[in-house]
Length: 131
View 1 (cartoon, rainbow, N blue to C red):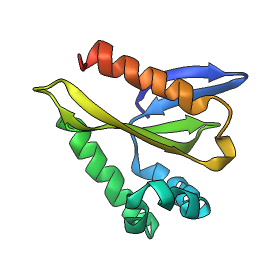
View 2 (cartoon, rainbow, N blue to C red):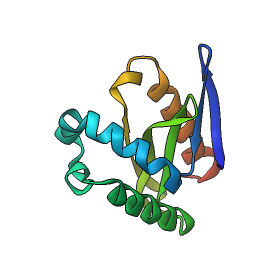
View 3 (cartoon, helix red, strand yellow):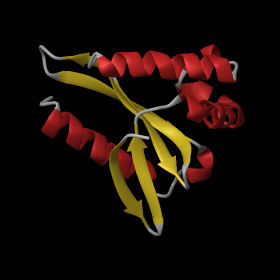
View 4 (tube, rainbow, N blue to C red):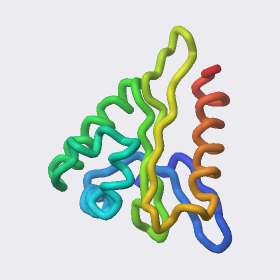
C-alpha cells in the first residue's frame, strides 16, 4: 500500500493511499450500505453494481493517476478503506482541479473528511502547483 499522506484523529491513524484492487470488496460493501444516501449526491453509484464494477473503477483510477489526469485516493482507517477522496477534472494549463469525496456514514462527524481535505488541498497547492 502506497501511503501518500497520514494523520491522526484522536487515537485513530488515518491514511490517504492509492486505491488497490484488494480494497474493492470493502468499498463495494460500504457503497451498498450507504447507497441511498450516496446516490443523492454521487451519480456514479448507479454504475457500481458489483465488486467487479468497483475493481474496474479502481483500475481506471490507477491508470488516470499514472497519467496525472486524476488523483484518486482511498481513505483508510482501522486498516480498512472507509471512503475515497480525489482531485478530478485536472487542468494543468489553468492549474485547477475539482474535489470529490465520500465516506462511510459510520465514520462521518469525526473530522476525518475535514482533515483528509486539508491534506489533499496541501498536495494540490504545494506539490501539484494548482491554484
